[in-house]
Length: 188
Image (tube, one colour):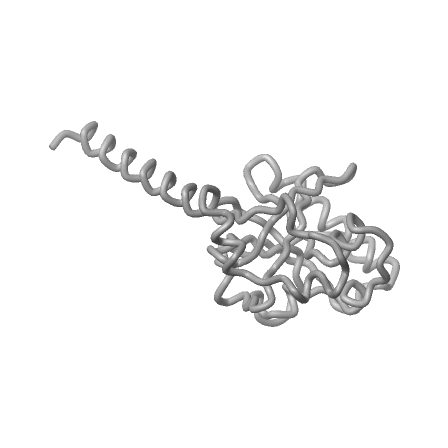
């Protein structure tokens, strides 16, 4: 078999695998949402936070994490207490506060995100407000039924997304670790 024929077969297999993944993640969206519950997310508020959020099991995402311990620890994927106990103002604010902040990670965004998060780490250290230095980025994929993602860009970060994880969320089962990126910053 010639090299060109072999390359075509491999490419066709990759395209088929991507199409099947796309079918599972996009076309079957209602079925996927039915298999996840978000009672903790809504916390009694009459908001539909997952409206327009989607399962995304083919893009990479990143999240800033502490330098110590297990990168897949549950604490790296939990809301801070102040976010869980937030006062309700309106649905948009409520849902954003109750989501976990993640960033889309790709060739276009990775340098920007490393610089952005290194700058945040550096500023927190110089202000003395970083009891636990978060100087690494966890790059990951969300597995099927791992949660829902909504694009929520800001003026400072066009790659920002809200991640809504289901009630039964366990990072080791729902997140695929891709790599850890150490951030460099100017220590004072």
